[in-house]
Amino acid sequence: MEAKIQGGAFIIARKIFTSELWLRKPSTWKVIWVYILGKVNHEPYNGLGEGEGFFNFTEEIKLIGNDCTPDKIKKFLQYAKESSMISTTRSTRGMIVKVLNYSEYQDLDNFRRTIESTSKAREKHERSTPIYNNGNNGENGKKEKEEEKEIFSLTEIQEQKERDRIYQEKQDDWNRRMEAGEFEPKEYIPEEFK
Image (cartoon, rainbow, N blue to C red; front, side, top):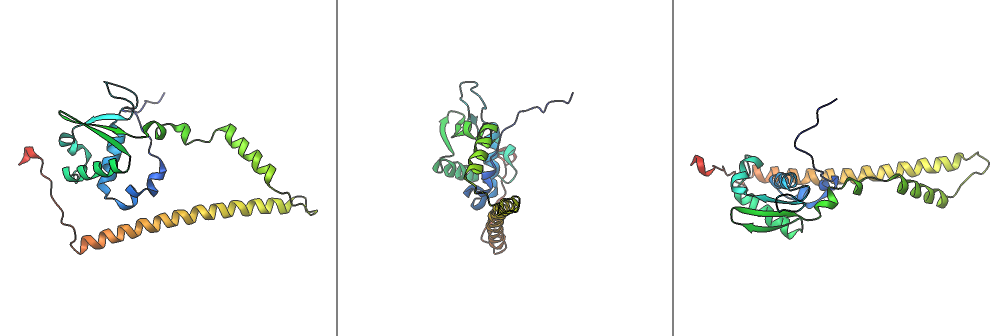
């Protein structure tokens, strides 16, 4: 019997790759978001509900990443609140962060197609699809269905290429601005090392 993976798991929806956070915001913000998603409660515990967690970012900043700064965390939290991703409540030694819509995104049933819905969709499609026989033993109908599949696949490919193009433009713009000196790298030194 294989050993179970310790520490639990959480879900990140693939639609993050087309979100404003992914395409237009600093990379550190993505890391902060994943950190929050991974640290909030998956069920009520210790007085906090599902999707809520207690954070002391001053102490946890080292766990998020070496390029993370208090200012980046502050700006991300402001963005996330304005974007209805989170709500926050100040506490004596930190803050409580609640991930809005947490249970919706952490329920795999919201991502899966059920057998029942798939078979209903197939039946509806088959009822509405005209049959072109013309004495060809159904060859025209098969060809049309294959063309529909190819068009659908081509659409998916085009959408992915567009997302990749936008991402590459943003990456090129960021690199161009870095080389032009528009950003000055800031070194973060934790308080205990000053």
